[in-house]
Amino acid sequence: MKLVIAIIKPFKLDEVREALTNLGIQGLTVSEVKGFGRQKGQTEIYRGAEYSVSFLPKVKIEVAIGDDMVERTVEAIQKAANTGRIGDGKVFVLDVQQVVRIRTGETDGEAL
Image 1 (spheres, helix red, strand yellow):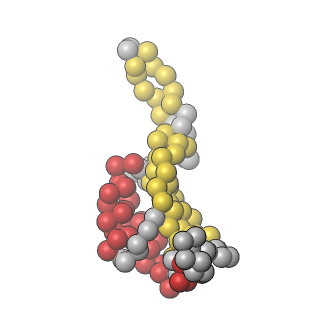
Image 2: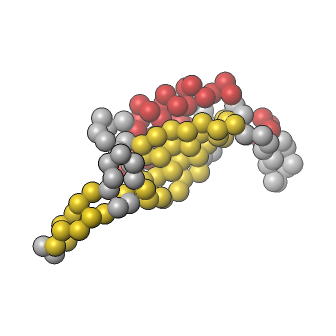
Image 3: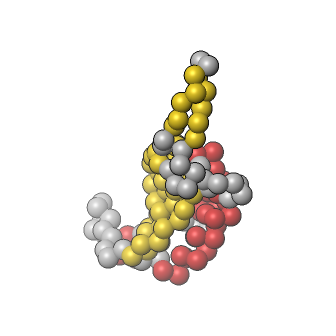
């Protein structure tokens, strides 16, 4: 089992969700986050004054999947979230040791 974490631009969320749904992924977690990478934030003008925004708004998507779905999931996220510009985000894949569905007590693959 794997946990796929994607950090993407907020306006790409619906496209990524649709791409994952089309793969048969039934559940995901979405969080609004802030951060920066190579783009190092940006400069904005507010009421005539220029100021620097250190952290940019992003969306973090987390989805637990079976090992057989990793490549298709990462590819779907990459295609759906791509704008071709700096700040498109990153995808991380982590190992998952155990999953338990609280309601039924199902574990691991059955709990996904």
